[in-house]
Image 1 (cartoon, rainbow, N blue to C red):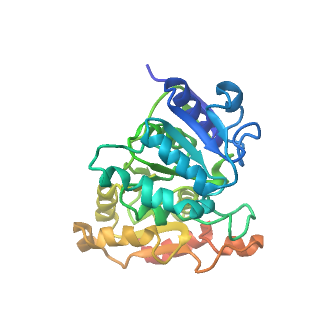
Image 2: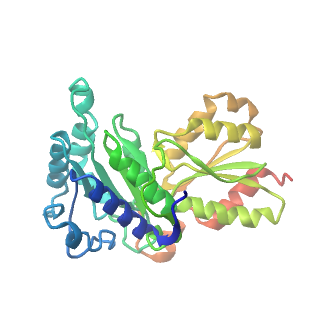
Length: 332
């Protein structure tokens, strides 16, 4: 029997996943700055400290390097920590522990240990938080063997991917776009998982494949509605997982549409769109292309504080419409 479905916000879906995991497995515990009584920087952890106690919902000092190091150590010794960065930008302070320790321990110790931990990473622009609190750095971490990187776009996927991450034997970074926290959508009750490494085709189309994740999925879908009125059909693929990438779904879509555009908030240069482009260029789908691949990424600048400049620094719906229209070449 299918589990009942309710409308939850993205933040509520994450909260529910954490609660389910903590109830099912006493090894799961939370760490982070202000995640206890305050409920987290974005109020995601809520009242979990009252439900599970301060031993399992641990407020940490303002030291991302130290907190991440404790999380790695706890994971190696048999626990399943979830470390929340207040902003994903602050993970730059913990790169040693994430990239040199968590990602490499299983390999360097011949598979004798695993590092089952989750890093939660609030990311992205749109909140007026300026250059040091608004970046999209997921491509940095997706570059590193030993790490898994997911980026959900809906409450349903936020819960399912987080539960999958919490059960994974290796470190998983869950990027949560800050503009999505209040977005509501259907979420089944109880436990379910979404396999890491499995994309979703969220809109079928004939003319252009658009690959996106997080907030850009919604902007791509809105752009698709506009272009549909002109007879241009976008096929929208929600990556959901940046490492590993579901290459087969993208390849088969491009073979059908013969055109590819990747849309992402991170800076265009060396962003996830470059990997998507190379994936197609190196596959059998390359011979099906009827136009050059298009990357629509963030501007080559820090995220501005000014709200209008902030919007201009990352792709918006009109940008996707214009780029996809040009790529389709008026095709109907």
